[in-house]
Image (tube, rainbow, N blue to C red; front, side, top):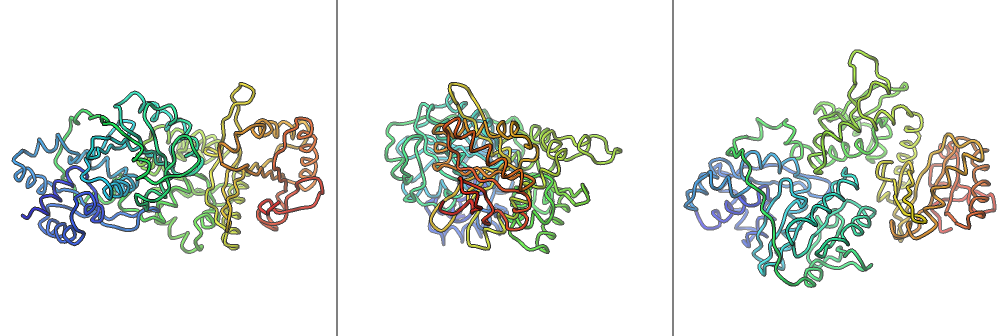
Length: 546
């Protein structure tokens, strides 16, 4: 065995599931040498290949040591297989854990490969239960913690992880990866209290960025920096923690064909379109199939094929409700998402499970086990109206070359803020971010079915008057978001607009308010000139330059 092949075995012992591009970066070998060496190791069954792709990572082959490869590395290193299992994440238990987190791990590996452009060699360490996902030690002794906030992780869970990081090892800095701009701004406020500096970036940017890409932001300051500039501000050595060795350390014994349908293999087996389907149904339970195809931006035949595949894999269930088929995730899918994003599977099932409490009782909202899923089902007409708005918005935006850059369901659309010394919140039905040719347009959606009397209308508007009376909208979004309110009838929309004007005059708080009704939405779509605003009683587009 030549030195390149031995180096690759050693690297895969420390960093399982690297692909060839990442192996070349972290090993310092040329891509051609890595391609040749990993091919030889695979032919000798010392490493095994695993396919992987996600929305952020193009299809690739990842590699891990087999039991034979681990024994060969022990012989070459003058140590024993149990010692390698104790020192490195090479056991079957470790590999299953990493496989469950594979989508996030791939992004962290791409970030690590970019770091190797500037600092080489680096040392790397994975964590099982520590607040950080991984840590990197640079050649000069500085250490970096890497924390990834998954798409389904709620703000409370991620805030607790950041809080636990404060009480851990004294890293030189932390790199925080978040799914979107709103959660980046929230994480910036949390990171400001850490005893070491933090730099934050959106995960979608990190997956393809180089050291010179200006995507990183500090907790304070508006300008984005490159990673080279960010880490250039650090000085002094740091520490990093080591977790206790796992008690169970079985040699890697599984093979892909035998384990292909196992839950922990799903991140490898599912294609990006299937993963996006699961993510959308996690956001919007009880979606009708036609709404799902619009949100996926695919045709009806493709949508049906994706749904059928997800049902075959026992990830999606299709139920008949209100005379229409509705789609929801199974407990298996909820568990997979929770493991992927380092959240609690039990909490996910308790909130979102679509399974029945009593299999012998017909399906109704009282018989659904997930508390949040049960609530959405109880108000199915309202839930479907919001789903229809979101689906129509995505379809209409695509037809005019706009992009729905972000579309958050109610559980992520809420905002918490302080007003006159007290904590308040707004709980919209959705939050969106529309991207046009030269600008971003954030908005909240309220689909209102119960605001019939003026007193009720004023009560519905009160939380937003508090929210817009201060800097909270700018702090949360970088721009003042529009508030879109949809009522059931044209007459109610006009009445709500009149009440809102009176409330804004009374409180001296101005809201970028746009009001419409269901009939207008159905006929012209959310991007049409259907919204009442201002004082001229004319209908305008909510997304124009007004």
